[in-house]
Length: 173
Image (cartoon, rainbow, N blue to C red):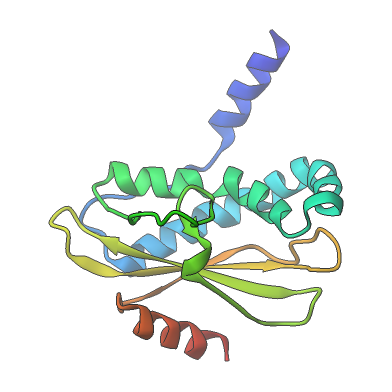
């Protein structure tokens, strides 16, 4: 009984993101960052021992376990507001956090103890028109389990892969 009550209290304390159908890509990014900033540290601390142990066995995949807890609500709430953020998966796709697809990511920046992997999700409105792309930047260590700072969502207006990659490079370099 205590566990159920504790879970309910934890759910009530979460600062769930709120999206509405007429938001711009920039407004979506601001709301995504508000949610991440309010939730990531407590989640990180609550999962730290589990994820440190997991890192010893599965290395970087431990970060996927973290993102599986942090990010789905962002994508679910966006979908509830009428946005499309997923794409057709390919047979060998590896997906974390509900909609973060590894083939739609780059990891080229930072030292081994503070690497940056940036995932991208093209966002479409109810009419199926692209309004831009969310770039989710995940700082992480390859040496031990550590997320040195909050994940950050950036936005760009581009929606074609080559332009998205160029936008990420401009952001990170």
